[in-house]
Length: 168
Image 1 (spheres, rainbow, N blue to C red):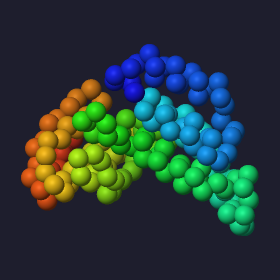
Image 2 (image 1 turned 90 degrees about the vertical axis):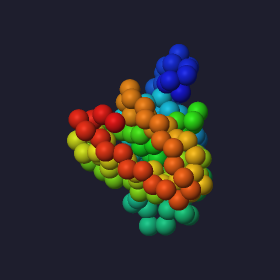
Image 3 (image 1 turned 90 degrees about the horizontal axis):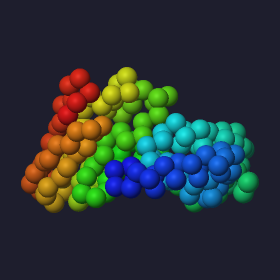
């Protein structure tokens, strides 16, 4: 990941560039999973486009193994989620690899570590609000860009985070 191993993240980025963008199926999805972790949302979006376009225009995509492989196509949702939220190392990262093409959007109900759900909204490529819903309570850390915020929630409690000027 970019935070703990920046040299390894740079090497992963270069490896993905060398691999190219035209593969389909599980191999492609496996290759693009690290893209969110290294903050390369534009690369992920470019990698997904050929496969997603091909599958969308087939009359029976399930019967066409060259374009539809269940672990590959459904694995794409994990890659998309990684661009919008990541949860590791005790921190929930908000919009870590947002592609410029997705300047406005909303995500609801994504699950993060420590038994919590998360809702996000962004406009103009900047986070507008985030709401964390804790199932069992605990300590949480949210990160957006270069800022972090610590929260302590009880079981069943939610906390909304207002973002002003693109900062937590």
